[in-house]
Amino acid sequence: MKLSAIADSVGAQVVGDATVEVNNIASIHSASAGDLVFVEDEKNLRLALESKASAVIAGDFARAKTYSKPLLITKQPRLAFAQAAKLLHDKSSQQPGIHPTAVVHSSARLAHSVVVGPRVVIDENVEIGEATSLGAGCVIGENTKIGRDCLLYPNVTIYPGVQIRDRVIIHSGAVLGSDGFGYVCDEFTGHYVKFPQIGRLEIGDDVEIGANSTIDRGALDTTRIGRGSKIDNLVHVGHNCQIGENVVIAAQAGLSGSITIENNVVLGGQVGIGEHARIEEGVMLGGQGGVLPNKVLRGKGIAFWGTPARPVREYLKQLAALERLAKKK
Image (cartoon, rainbow, N blue to C red; front, top):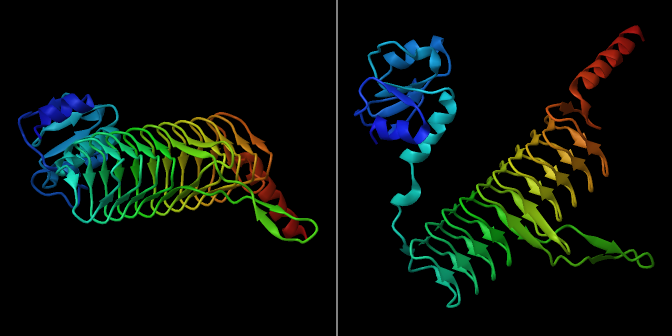
């Protein structure tokens, strides 16, 4: 793509030759001719200019100067770089069609531009929107609806009745809509009887779900993942959870059933949250933090840590107090 086209798409200003073309992205150290790189501070600009890259995305600090390479000037270089990467690696280059080894039920409704890879299985009454791509070995259960411009990597499993909106990315090995972990103990025999798991799972627009993550359907109601939320690899979301918009959940986090996570929450790696807990808008919970069942974390922009989770400053003060006590002893 020409730099002028990228600049128009990401809202940047070109300094230098706007007709220069780039075809890939790279780090400064691995860049070659045709690559686009980015810098977020002035101290790295010289390294970028000395690299083999054809163009550089930089911040306002690089404005109003002349350089040996063309620059794209923007207030958010990292964001512009991510947006440019998406433009340069658009999946639309895949040819629409159904691989001969795929099994597609006669009642399934697939848009003409859908890509269906080898050994994909699509059950009855499935609907799939325009420009969606299913990688090899995906299994799509009956009555599932998948929107447009979605990307399912190989070996994704979607249980029956799941609703997936537009521009959703699901990585390999993810399992969506499986039964929740719900049982009733017979007090006379001590045996566990499975509680009905007949609810639904709804995934909003622009969600990304990492490899080998699992999201359970609701028991009787609906599990929801809100628009723009990003879920890392190896994350488990239990039944009936309500995940808000633009929530970020890092790897190996585990959410029990019936948890509410409000908008713009950030959960670090290996976080554990007990059932019926609520994490209110804008809370940040650090890695390995734990929230006990039925508890509420509130405070927009406040970082919590530890188990049971509490504000970081409070947690660190308590650690320091324990250390002083240990030394006195």
